[in-house]
Image 1 (cartoon, rainbow, N blue to C red):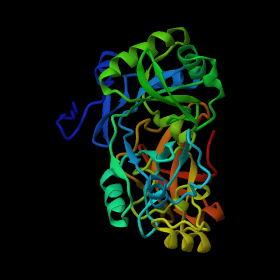
Image 2 (cartoon, helix red, strand yellow; image 1 turned 180 degrees about the vertical axis):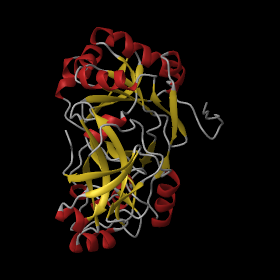
Image 3 (cartoon, helix red, strand yellow; image 1 turned 90 degrees about the vertical axis):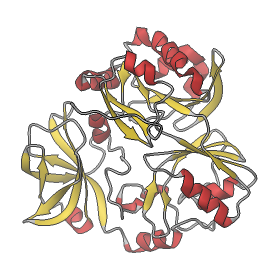
Length: 369
């Protein structure tokens, strides 16, 4: 039996007791916090996400808050996307890069006010990076981690459930738009977003002492929609080609190599970290591309690979595979990989090593579904 020992360095979330009571069986560590992986029946959790509605503890999606007169300027300097037209109440999917153009994180940046922003982070400790950049550049801004813990409600029935809780006006909230609101006095930011492509919302809890209360309130309202617990689903995210930061790319990957080209703006006046390096990549083209693979295999492990494995042609490595699953909707084994651009453009057959050994694979565009 494998165990993860909790300590002050690995925090539980405001929803942790509720997840344990709901039958939590598998966890991982994400942003130095517990992130649920499964409640013991991954196929049922997948079906619930595709057909009904699921509740997910994603509080490990930590926030870095920028507050102050230079918050907007600081956010822009940290971000490779043009923020000039971002409105209050709008989230942008962004790339945060180092000075060589290597991607450090792919958060959603929420603009709560002209002088207040949240970076809603993937699994990388960006608080110290943001603090150091703000100090070195002399920005008049406070950089901190706020008391914010996202709870996701995902699936085709999520909108009806959220409308029952908050009112019909929530149907007007567009993708990556949000409102500040409350539920029975529980302070929240309600955003149409989430770690799936099945539709849904994230409830950014702003009082960690009320996590169990919020969980139970959502579950009670969701009973009519067959709600149940789940977690960011590995099979669905591969089918939908949702980038898993730290898993789908190598340490030297840039945004153009992980499918984020349209979120990188190299021709704006504003300066940002990595701009010169990213401009060079944009001009010359990336060395590798993020692609899908159709694998000639009937069986694949439904869990993430423990490490990236090689993609080869005639024994020569041409890329890395980061995830492989069996898709029940496609009735095929599919995978995600980062492969040399010339190989992708030639659409040459490749060999991958999956859970069952070597297999031939065909390169395809993303997403699968």
